[in-house]
Figure 1: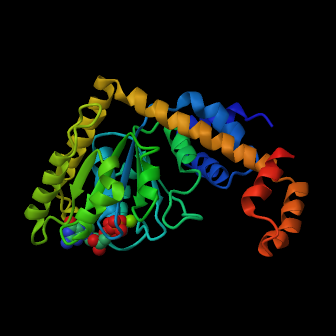
Figure 2: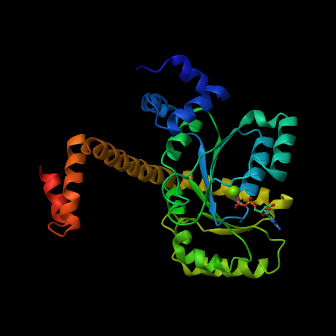
Figure 3: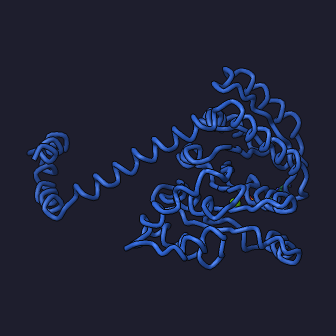
Length: 313
Ligand SMILES: Nc1nc2c(ncn2[C@@H]2O[C@H](COP(=O)(O)OP(=O)(O)O)[C@@H](O)[C@H]2O)c(=O)[nH]1
Ligand SMILES: [Mg+2]
């Protein structure tokens, strides 16, 4: 079914109803969503995508909220995707903030969407990249993607984001643990939030030391540690400045192109495996698998040999 040009126009003018409708379509892979994605691809690539990850409770949502405020105050258009079932964009103090934003008319330039994690624990759900594309095509300057760093998700987020922010807190003795777990590899910016807490300076120094031990990155970017106190909206300006520095660095070094090429490559690989898988598991093969399970269970056959036959048929 061809996509109506009216829909694309509405989307590009950031019509909120249309945005919400299209995002739902894309998230659920409803019929026609791929057609829309095809149409809007040429309008994407302008937004700067910022991934915000870290352990639960580190203050990711608080910082996201602070960034939204600052960015909209500066006149930027902001899209937010929260891949966090517990994201309190509808609760407590943060709601208060949102209401204030609404009062000042700032909410006009913000679009927030929560997406449920599916499948893997805390993982970035499947269509986050596509949802980012939709927001991108609607003319956002920045897209903030909040995701809990508990496993694979923080690595996934680096597959989408131009700038990846890893949020840690002083009391997480696991901050060093986090470094080991691969967060070091993906961070463009470290935030030490809850800097009002005891020991913040020492932890910031430790993180800096670990960074210095690391070989310099390919593109020559030097990772910084930004101290914030999200709950008091302190340090948000420093964080924003650091984001802009990284954004400029990516452009000037030509590394943005490299990064996005890599993201595109991974996307194609994912698309191909997805489509191959869908095509492969037709009724006949599903039936065949069912029939053969007992054989394997009784050790008359093994999964490897069976897979080989299945693929060669
Ligand atoms: N003391 C202190 N508390 C904070 C700070 N930033 C956020 N919090 C609180 O920490 C809790 C978790 O914050 P939230 O943004 O939901 O964390 P998330 O799970 O990483 O998104 C909330 O109660 C916040 O009010 C901070 O800088 N200092
Ligand atoms: Mg959160």
